[in-house]
Length: 350
Image (cartoon, rainbow, N blue to C red; front, side, top):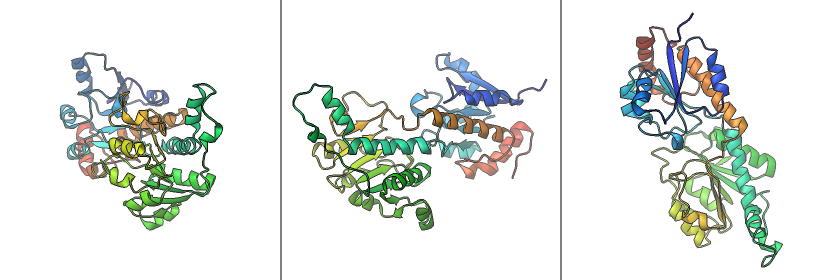
């Protein structure tokens, strides 16, 4: 009988059980499930022997098992971390790279679900669907249907911050379904990329001053933290809407509540907060022109299946010594090759 020599651990669950089914058939992967209810020392005894760690989303991960330098130093045989979806803001990427530990994500697996959520928020806001629903539940008196005059999306201008997998799909849906004009800001792609992705490149401030809808679709990084604040909101049209399905921490929530309270913009659709979940008395929750969802833009049956199956496929590649397709810290590759060969005694591709 073949000994399963690669220890792959995860806490609680995968996004979809398909990953467990896929990995169960791998002859050299020892898949181990841990729970946060287990004694911490017992969990550490397993974690310290891990070759790979499949991570939960940030808000579901508990300390001290965050993917940070202290954990990496306690795991001498660790080869890689894999995050659930596209975001990896909780991972100490620098510490991974210095140690020769790979970080992979499932970028693109959530693009369709998140993009549809963006369009859903745009429709719900512009048609005042939630406002109408809330008022009708209070009874038939004191309102009329003209109080909920809506607007079409057709022909309006959408400004996208971050034209990656999600932003590109948002642009495709907006132009294909509603013939919207799409502007985008993304300093990491070329003008040809903008054209290929159906958007016109503009400056950061232009996104806010020229758009009827602003959609934030970039990752949370040192560069994007607190990138959007009072100055940007006040550039927006009084009829414009602010939407984010990215990460809390990119936009200033207090400043957004301020401009909405002053009726300086028309409304907001928010799937992310900092921290999550937000407190019940959060000022944005008191505003009728704010639509919120609990960080579920990527939580669909189709998306969770893709995230789990893509992650399983990458683990198989990693443990075979192959370069994974969605490698985040490519600078770690050379040191990782040495680490992999030292730990496993097997070669890794160049």
